[in-house]
Amino acid sequence: YPASLSKLTGRDILVTEAGVHGEDQDVIRKLFRKLDKSFANVPEIEKPTLVHMVTWNPHLKTKDGSYDAEILRDKKIMRISPVGCLAVVNTSRPEMEFQAMNSSNTFTNRSSLLWLDGTNSLGRAKVGGSYGTYGDCQHFCMPGPSDEVASALEWLVVQTVLAEERNVS
Image 1 (cartoon, one colour):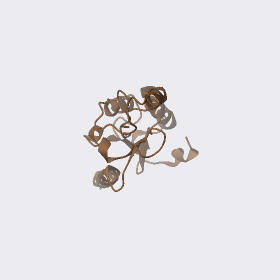
Image 2: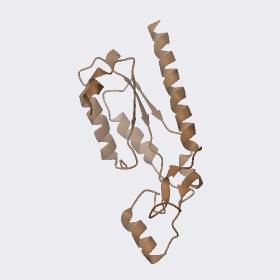
Image 3: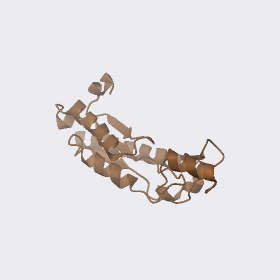
């Protein structure tokens, strides 16, 4: 983590996301352990507020929609399944990231989780099967759901700032 983390104060908001390649709960826990270590000796009042954004569910044609190069390669070679995205995936990603975030000891009173319910059923809003080797089933068409998340993040930041101002005055 950059040294600039040490410059954050209780008036700052730190937004995190695991990213599409951080699907393992241990990877996400590692993110929060690094943050814990960075802020271990900082008094609670001086810690930034943490907003963790749950990563979008991929909608690839695998068991849970996640990227599995071997399965996707075999399906393409054997022409078992056309390239494209699943409309709906069953995933526990939001719950997994929430558990990982709760494993953090540092931000227990100063954290929020941003996740829009129903994103597991937005496969038809993905760029789809016409892009890349297996189709782009991670990125949304624009404008689209990503705009909604940006709006939700903006709302959450504004509400956090207003709550801080109320607490100060």
